[in-house]
Length: 330
Image (cartoon, rainbow, N blue to C red; front, side, top):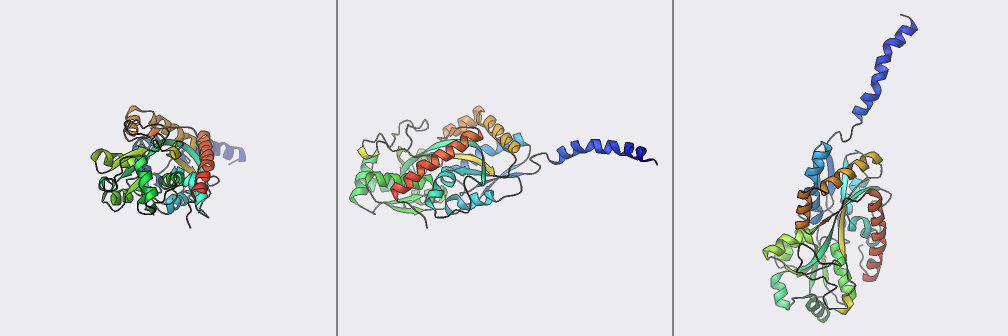
């Protein structure tokens, strides 16, 4: 067979390769894992599980939530930062990406260099809640009451949180710093375990994310005192903000939380952009918007650049709070 004939016979196979390459590189090609760096039942977990079914439909592959708690979200975040399978994402938080680098002497990941921000999923206020029996025992019905009792009884009140360095922890530290009060801090491995002990009466109070506390507020198992955001929450419009509590030192108080999807820095830009588009579409659907609003969350869907800018500005903000409060984790 002549050389030219052999070349012609081989040509169709060569022409087919580009299409075959595209088929092999289609993404996602297997289940997508979203790591939640906190235990089940906390706000990070609630939001991830609310989003997962919509993202699964859009991507055409199962979306699996994996809870990987530890070290204030650092354990799960490091897992994603070092993932190389191309199918692992992180539901990051203000703690994992704006607070922890100021709070911990060393992180097992770089919040900026190791991640590609995808989109801000939602922002939520924190809510100051107490065990009802403990609130009655101390005579605390308002923020002013809490400030008075905490100042008069240093170390007597105990404050639980979802872990060192979380926005829940720092919201309490900011309160203590501004009011000149002292309360014992007990970090837990997530909101879920902390709430269980709070409702059992083993803890006095908590500055929890609103979505995880809201069902217990509505059931009466927790007493809501105030929200930590600058404005009142639509989910609890009758509840005042800490800033409007009448305590002079707290007039500028504001401590909200946010949650967003991130990928390892090695994730291709087109895949990051696709996830961002699909999340934005999902968050714009009436069903998901209503579900999140009913839980006290404000859905977002901002682009990658906007999310990266938020992380940068929040890192500066919380570094100041950490410094002023004196909070630290060994």
